[in-house]
Length: 246
Image (cartoon, rainbow, N blue to C red):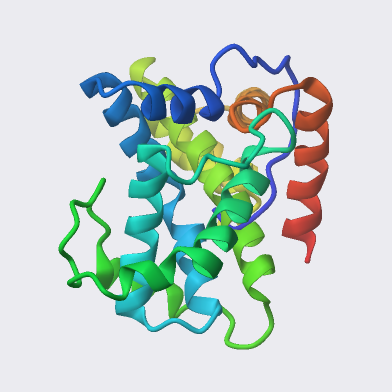
């Protein structure tokens, strides 16, 4: 998703956050903790990869750096000196990556490329093909990271919404309404889409309103996993909109 989410509503829940996953994975070597951390890596690897590439590293080095960064994060070797209770998960990851690039990369130069065990499989072809679609000169490394981070949050929320509607047997309605939720330019009007679903326009508009509201709740839920307080969640929400407006 490349556009804004609308209709934010609903409480944020902070009981289980990404901080929890990182902490548990760094303190215990259980399959459950490792898989949770690996899933976190699979979700957020691309904003970090794009950041490293925009810093001037070639595709192969960027791939190695991104994978090694997450492996070190899992092992706990990156956590020292970084206060997880202050700031947001987005800021934590970027700060940890900058620290890693500045101080840790030179240590890997003496190691054989690919000699370590990867925490997760990074698709190098997909990574670089996505990166080549980024603006050539308009965004700094920090801005491209924030842009991709924001879009990752929206994509995760939309995926959750899709799975919810599929479980309810309403996936056809969801797929028809999705462009109206994400802010993409819809090829058809409300009336045309409603007719294709054998619905009247008023009922379809109400369904879209409910989907948009739920989408907003899910975006808030995704943000809540990256922070520790309601105040930080509101700050991240404002930041998300600022990034997407640029």
